[in-house]
Length: 78
Image (cartoon, rainbow, N blue to C red; front, side, top):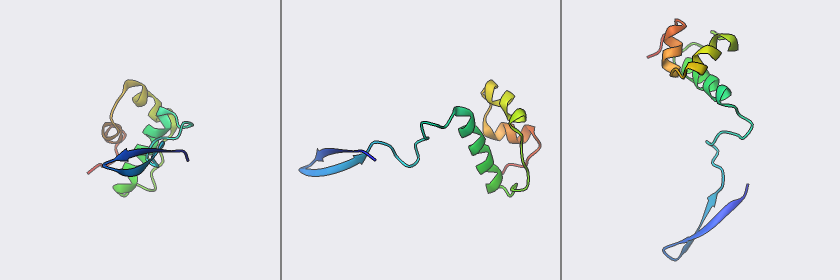
């Protein structure tokens, strides 16, 4: 990982170019959308439920939020 170095108040500070939270350059918008939905499902106890990509793609293309998608598909979101 490349790091940038800057001087702040006479101290040298290293700043990573990419945070661990930044999406990978190989991630598509859809894969990030799907991952967020999976995370919400896990937080709400929906581990056993699996949603097909074919069901998610229309919602993704319409720009719907993850919570809307889960409620539209009948998943309980707190």
